Structure formats: structure tokens, C-alpha cells
Length: 151
Image: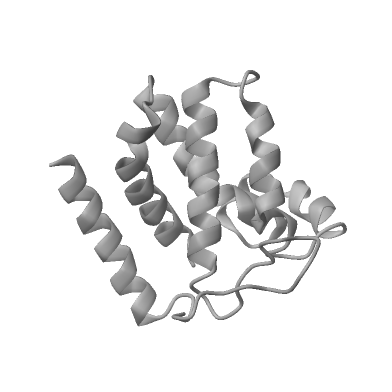
């Protein structure tokens, strides 16, 4: 998925989970969602988040290939250790945003290495090409559903 679709998907998931998660600080939560929506692509040198921290992707890519560690349940599990170190709403947003990013990339033919370091790349049965017309339809659908959730 492209960055804007990850952000829209994360927003939709975040809005739908907000009441269940009992978020005390919505502003921190939505900042966390945006960070989490982009964070897994830190290992890709041409991603939006990599452009903000240019040297980091070069270092990371020497240890991990794209869609492996940062797109895994292991990474999501490690993020949970941020509770107590960062505001709860922020961490919850980062975790939901990261999980939505991983789920979104499972909708593409490449898939993700969900159980890194074990197993193979996993994708969902229905996939679409990154940047293609189906992704654009999904993007607008996520925006529309988000609008309906806040109305």
C-alpha cells in the first residue's frame, strides 16, 4: 500500500477501535495512529517515513529486508513494551496503526513475513497491486467510512 492509503486505513481502524480501547487522550492517540501507519516502512529507503530520517533506513536495511521484522507480530509485541515509557494513548495508537499497516500490506501480492523470523510471506486471499486502481478505490472507501464513523 502507498502511504496515504496506510494513513486512511489506520484512521478508519483507529476510529472504529477508539471506544473499545477507552482512549483518554484522542490527540495523542491519533498522532500514534499516524506514526504507526508509517513506521513499518522505516526499512524501505523510499518510504515517507524514511525521507524524514534518511540515514536510519540504510542502517536498518543492513539487518532486515523490507516487510520482515517491522511487518511482524514480533515487532508489534515489542511495541507493547512502550507502555509506561510513553503516554498510553500514544502507544495504543502506534500499536493499532502498526497492526493496520501490516494488515494492509497483507492485501498486496508481496504480503508480509508475519511470523518473522519464521515462516514465509503471508498475504490474504484477495490482493491488489500497490498504487493500482483498486488501492485508490480502497483509499476513498476508508475515508468515506471514517467520515461516517465520526458523523
